[in-house]
Amino acid sequence: KAGVTQTPRYLIKTRGQQVTLSCSPISGHRSVSWYQQTPGQGLQFLFEYFSETQRNKGNFPGRFSGRQFSNSRSEMNVSTLELGDSALYLCASRQGDDQPQHFGDGTRLSIL
Amino acid sequence: AQKVTQAQTEISVVEKEDVTLDCVYETRDTTYYLFWYKQPPSGELVFLIRRNSFDEQNEISGRYSWNFQKSTSSFNFTITASQVVDSAVYFCALSEGSSGTYKYIFGTGTRLKVLA
Image (cartoon, rainbow over all chains, first blue to last red; front, side, top):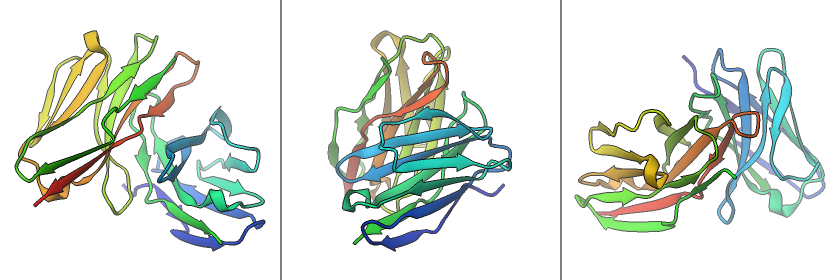
């Protein structure tokens, strides 16, 4: 079974631009979550989608948004990029609420 | 409120030493799930173990063992005879449904350095 796939692996953007990250979950997994990881803040939860609906949300500004498609693939968008958005963005999927999340390799976003 | 505390920010040990990583959790729910993950320097988070709140049996997998104690709300992880390849950041996580949906809450992680 293929794991969680995130694209792209690396991105370099400048301040003010916007970016879209993609995540394909493990086949059969309907829940997809996004996390931001920085050296100083650890793993910060962004949001979780289940069956195309956002069901949990972390404490991030509205510049961070996401969506999930009918095939469970998910995208995360960050608009008006700031230097502080430089981070590793991780996507995770799980089969059910009692099951572990499985993570992708992440997208490393650098803002210049 | 749900919370996961990993008080040890960083631990350094010499190869072949045993090391225990602590995890303390808070939840009001009676049904919950606990997890441990390993994040090596390459960055991917690797799932290690899942434990539900009704199963307090300790588990051993090779050099890894987990001690789950509901009385102290702890789910500690021990690596026996540590190796350099064990160097990583280890995260403990809790999933529980008291908020209506099963949110995943991670601890802040413990960085383990195993020195040759």
